[in-house]
Length: 501
Image (cartoon, rainbow, N blue to C red):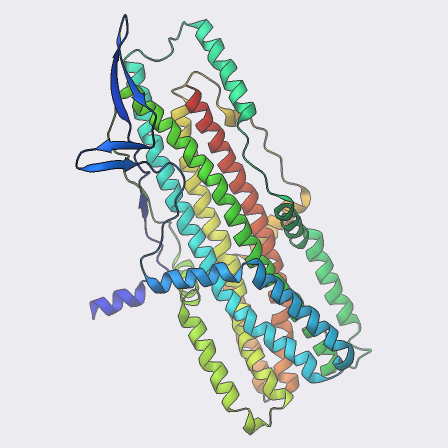
């Protein structure tokens, strides 16, 4: 019984994450100089080891693979959902739907079709985006533990050098000037690669789609549609117009968000690989100078503190990010198809699956925004600890900290407004307000006996709101990506500073 309870309570738990940086092994060769004995080491990536033919140093960044086959398969599906072929296929599908609408645009089936497709795709993408977000959090927290592990070793070895008198003497002005000149030259050369033209175009498109002005224009369009309500007699057709438009837009936003996240993740891995190589170079050099062969210690990042309500939201997110949520959707689709003949495959029947998936998708959208904000906050705190560890290493070196010389660009007014808006809509109480809204919509549709108008009540408002939330998700991703790149670049420059020591 206890094991079953632990299994049931496991989802949503954000426990501590521990990791250690791969220890760099060097081969030591003694060399005697005139006045002192110095240990000279061969800077190699592969060195002899007792009982083993060689030891291969891991200098770059290596992402940890999951143990379970099902987890690895799900992660592959997440990657595939954000790939270029899937994105282009969805865009092509939207274009085909729009072209077909030239002839069949006045039929209910054409309008309802995109609503159903959007609801099902959004439900699937919600699950995949949640998993993508949770995977990114685990990766970043583990990465910070590894960086702190190596910083601890580097700081220990720098102190050993100072104790042995191999460091720069405090009154050696000429050496200090020379070291500062080398530092300035290295900082000029230490530039991380930039995105290619396609990556820059995608990032620019993300900036436009997530811009505060774009979000305002979206709501202007909604109010224009409301203004035509009286002219259209507030009819079902009038509701289907906006439902079709927002459904098509939401499909595009979901596919684009998955694609831009994967694209930025691949680019970030390039930067992380260079950062780890720079850190490894520092460790190798220090081990050469000190003869230190103590393994890098394991560093544990403690579990984040959260309220019971936030814990419940994470529980639901873990539920959505597994096959369970998708399995339920498949079961619902089977039941929906089975009752089709009894309902004569009418418009009311077509709307049923969109109603169910749309309501669930609305809730998932708010949950996605909540966990995006909360996990980013936990990551920022973990990276702050890395920054403090790197600062401790830099303090052992008589040159200026490159981070102190960097001028961080302040956020624009639109970015600050977007950040505050995103923070508000990610609050756990707003998620609960969304649940109350869904319950109210279900009650309203039930009072209308789930007619076409009643079902549109559960289709149109969720579609309007979820599209808005997805635009905010792009905004949150953009702001988080800027912060993360600034942090990685700062750590890279600090690693280069330590290396010239």
